[in-house]
Length: 178
Image 1 (cartoon, rainbow, N blue to C red):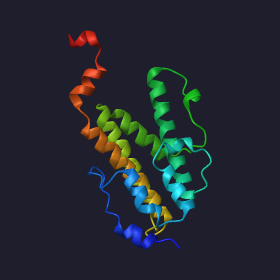
Image 2 (spheres, rainbow, N blue to C red):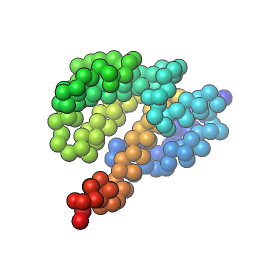
Image 3 (spheres, rainbow, N blue to C red):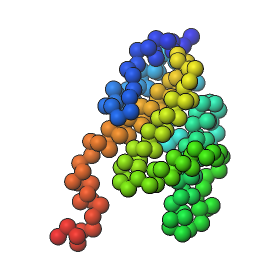
């Protein structure tokens, strides 16, 4: 018997842009004894690049992968036009297409600062996760959405904690620093 009610009720709320309450590994440790091994295996997939997991049997995760693939495909199409290259060879299969994703990708592309563009995309991803979690409060789907949102927050915590001067120096050619 799994303890989803207890586990999910004990987790802190996640807010986009807030500090993460814990690392992903700590989250997995909290879940390990309270959920079935099969569900735990699904959660572990949420910590890496789940786009690499082609055969995903969990419906919510499958829908998330389809959304993420389609969004990335739209970004590829827009960038390919700008660079005057053929987009088809860079597109991934199994994505779906909807007008809203094109608009998200185009709005992101129009943002001049790369960091702001990435933040916009992650905010849209967050909204999609909110949509996927509708009707799921104390079940495995809610836990998967929590894990995916935690990864978004952890990503931004890493970005905001980076030594900006060091990163700038690393990105500039040596001749321009002298």
